[in-house]
Length: 98
Image 1 (tube, rainbow, N blue to C red):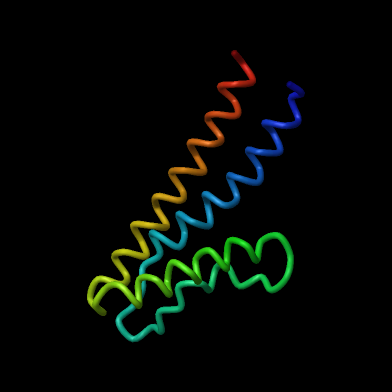
Image 2 (cartoon, helix red, strand yellow; image 1 turned 180 degrees about the vertical axis):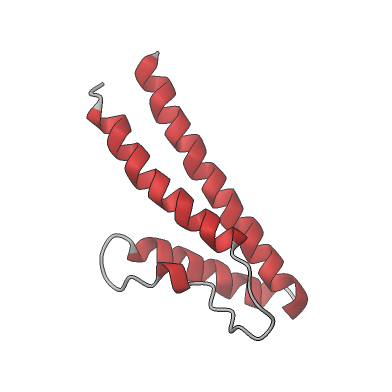
């Protein structure tokens, strides 16, 4: 396997992991409007897929959970996505060196 494949995967999946960590760990002030998809509003392009994913997660948490648990569910899902991306990065490098 070429070295540039795990490197490219690290950059792309690392970017998604960092933005997911940002969405999951961002603190909100008391009067601040809670726009969960503010980090993912890129418009068109490949990064819009991540914005659509988080918009779907936000929609699902609004439909399935009461108001007091929506933020908690969204943050848990965002952190799980970040861990998944970090795991995929590890998998790419593990497969490269073995």
